Length: 425
Image (cartoon, rainbow, N blue to C red):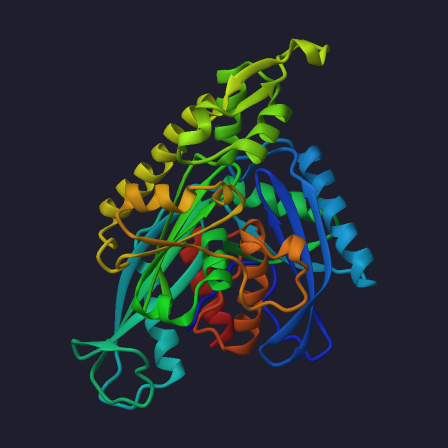
């Protein structure tokens, strides 16, 4: 599987004993993992830091100073545990209104044997396609090749033909949020090795190979956004996001029960459920009221009232996901398999509710391939962060077909793609 990321430096191969750092900046928490390379394709986490997120809303920076503090605290904790300082991080991107599209490019090869140079030349033709200049390229993933019109080719190298075609899954994000996040990380004296969309990283962390090959939808439920990705034939072929997450459920509880946000989060965690149960009417919970300091003034309500607030919002999220998936044209390719992950996916009954709304088989996903994760950071809430490390392992192990750089100047991402190709071919 070949893929690329943007970044201020070209991804570099890490030798055995070297370190890889990943930073997941979400709306509810900031996570930093530092991993040591034990052997090619194998890493072990040696440093872990996580912090309540500040200054981030719907995956985008809204307060640079607060976000800088949260990122710096998480990175420092990971560095202290690992016993070394890091200089560069691979950053997860959950906001930025990602746009996913499939582009097809063709080039003549004059009947000769196809080489890596021909693949790069075919990708270079993409710079002539019209894509918004105010977007940043995050991923360009070759999802299929054709030779003289024959499709279904996984690797055309060594084949002979007249015309080579490449189908690219291109993921872009709004330039503003990407640059703000890049600047915020830079203010923590760190370089950005590259950006990776969170649902892509979470998929690499949670999905098994058969799911990726046969077709699966990955739903990453975060605090401020719910991200979606479809994998087929071992590659991510589509991605999108819905600007609703677990924090919106918490806000609904706070408003509906007139309780502070901190207590609303606690009620959701301790008593919340995505589906009602027969015993909910009989179970009474204490709800501290806004402005009341005396615990005796707490409001006593049945659990069914709490569940009645949570369920409609979660149904709305899954209905949005179903609508986006149907509109994308990838619903059939994704098959009937769904994997739920992310911190907001852990409420009891979430899997069953997703099955009802999406009419698909659903399982809960957690990091599978990363060694050294403690039980406290091995759950669905840390899937994206762990997936960044899985991405780094693959990125270092494979020679990407295309690796454009994110420069401060240039005429859009396609222009920068052409500049890199001219400099490196």
